[in-house]
Image (cartoon, rainbow, N blue to C red; front, top):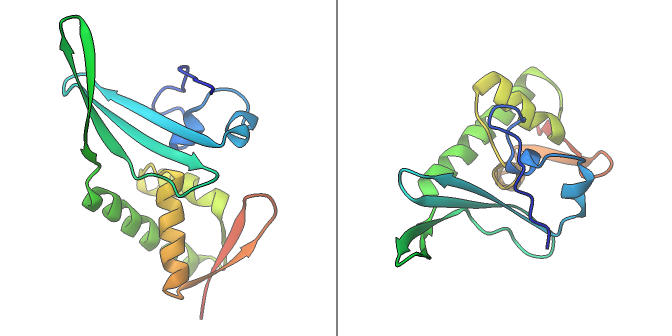
Amino acid sequence: MIINHHQRKSGTHSGTSGEEIRGSSDILAFLDCHLSIHHDKKKKLIKVTQTKQREQEERKPFYVKYTDVDKKIIFEFSGDVKDEEFIGKVKQVKDFIVECLAKNTEIHRSEIVKKIKDEKNLEIGESTLKSATKELLEENIISQTKAGGNNSVFKLKG
């Protein structure tokens, strides 16, 4: 188990929780599982997002509430991040991909996260991107070709 508490500060990375890890990209590539944890002090709430899971399907983001009781911290599952929030982001990403492909003949997977942050000011994680591209492929709207490593190229079917 590796615990890295030195993440990049907000606004200094390209948007995915996996890219918040400071240091070499080899760190994330080496991991079987990565959890990103964001703390809301006012609400005493922690949002846990699984950004990588090599062996199984990724877990949807969820909240953990914590309380101080007799000098002890008690953690309690507080529910999944609302599906509407996740579904809304997936729809935005799907629309963006189709919009990009209408202007260009193809787009590389690695470009999507950066472009959507630059052009729409929307930060997305790997699970959101995976869901969006999977839905577009299943709906027969786009095609996918492998481009070496973990990269893929997407094109509009037509």
